[in-house]
Image 1: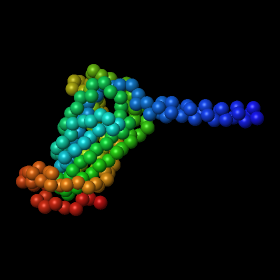
Image 2: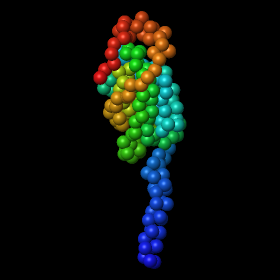
Image 3: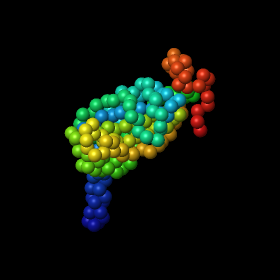
Image 4: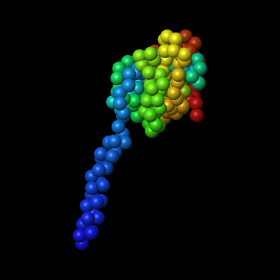
Length: 204
């Protein structure tokens, strides 16, 4: 009987430790100085980002994005939000509208488990203040999302830009929404020749 009680106590102890273990596993790590850059692409696929958050808590500037001609590389320009010192995010959430297809998308992405470790190595090899660091999010009107980390130097540092791919590519889920909310902006995109004159079906 005593051995049975001892066994149950062991089980209860392990169960009581589970929340602490989960908390340790989800520890975001130490703070790093960086900014968030939001851009779009490729040409012909402008979008309006209604919401962009990290870890469901930190909301970023977004709105109108587009204009990166080459979707295979990170956006060179875009909305910039200075974080200051903050942990490396573990997830990113976004909701956006495609002017070209009149389609709404949303996505909730978890970063790879080794992201913080890889970013830590990047900071070690390219330390501030000599290098500036950015978390870069590319969102396209065709439904795709890409995420990079960038270290760059405005002076003679040897390597001007170093990119660390975090999410090579993901596709958002189409959701319901009212395109009429963006009728004026969409008309402006057509008048400027940035999208075809008529809506077209979204890519599969």
